[in-house]
Length: 405
Image 1 (tube, rainbow, N blue to C red):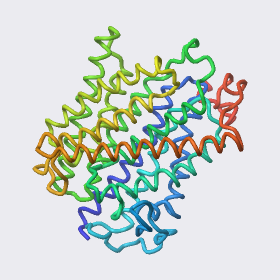
Image 2: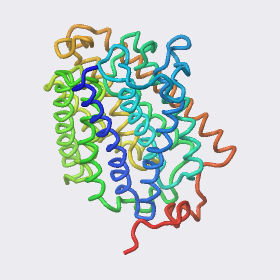
Image 3: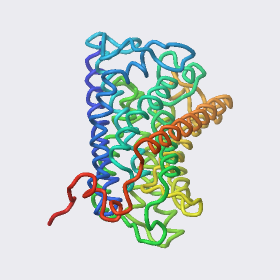
Image 4: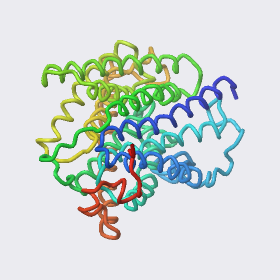
């Protein structure tokens, strides 16, 4: 064990945990005031639910010994059996440090989905959906990409910190939720503007801050790869914040605070899979493209006819897809010898591998999410009643109000 590496990954774990309350603020400010608490509750509840799942069997399903074909891990680490002060295989940190770092990813990934169905899902349905989704979607995909015997890892797919496992996975599940739940009452005719953009900006700042743990921490060492991942994370985010703002300035006539916050998140999403494999100039290109592409994707949800409350599909699915493919374009062994070269550095095959990883993640997450949703819909129902939706989910589901001044 290297004490410096171990200390850095523990700090990074705390940074990643902070991202989930940051997400709660980001999402909460974007909703109408009558739904701010119910929206924030999704993230805070998952800090509990996902962590307990991870302790008992989630970590084992994702990182346990493979039980066949690189699809799923065994239950060898059930209830963290054998996870303690021993060094994690092929690393310089302890097993408990590795476990808790990965736990924070399992917390925030399902929380991302909640923005797609904000303001209209029953809390009971939300809890059951997340329990099942973490178990049968997140854990297997994490095993494919990050498990030592995962089939996508063995094919050479690159995902440094979660483009496929986190963002595409969550974004596509969010699309399934939008389709099955349907639109909010009054969507398209009643104004549904963010009630507190100051809260959203504070949340975006916490996400940007915590994301350094997300990406640089994924090096699992306090080394040069972590330092470069830190640098490119910041530069891609800066570029995306600017490109989103300039795109909306050109198309809409005004640069907005919502635009700069959304652009920053789009850049963070896009650089995530590439963070340990690309240099600063490449990261600026990845971020700049992400800002424009994700902005256009958000504009497209109106013509496409789905109600993605807080733009999970446009930012996380689309941004994650671009980031995963951009890794296949810009990755360089000169940055990280443990990775691979991408198309622009002479290896066209890496782009093909990234396309495969993106494709199977989209299909698996979308289909299994649909199945889970339809089962829950048939058994307990998914949506709050029309009366509850009109009065606000804060009051109907939790008996509370976000503002009582």
